[in-house]
Length: 85
Image 1: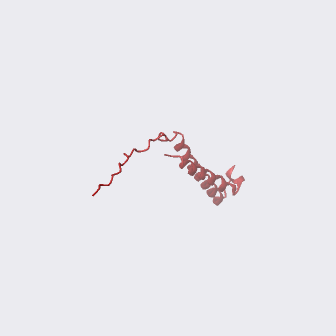
Image 2: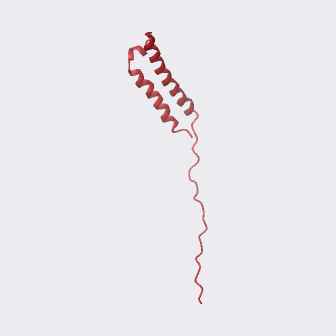
Image 3: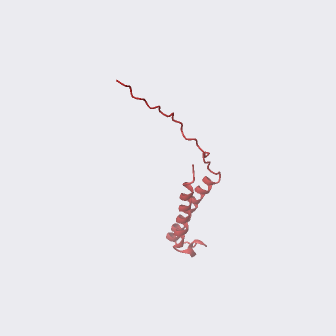
């Protein structure tokens, strides 16, 4: 009986990495944490000032816009956290 031909298997070569590993900029983590803390502090100051009836110069003039400012800073910190490696 005739013997069938065997196929030669190609040798596996892994793909070459063209990109270097991305490095986190040094400024990213401090700015991210500062945005979170300032946003949280802004909202807390607004609520404490509103509940005690004290007059905080800039914050009491803005009214409910303080929530928008605080949450914008917090969201900015979250967006920066996606760039952290």
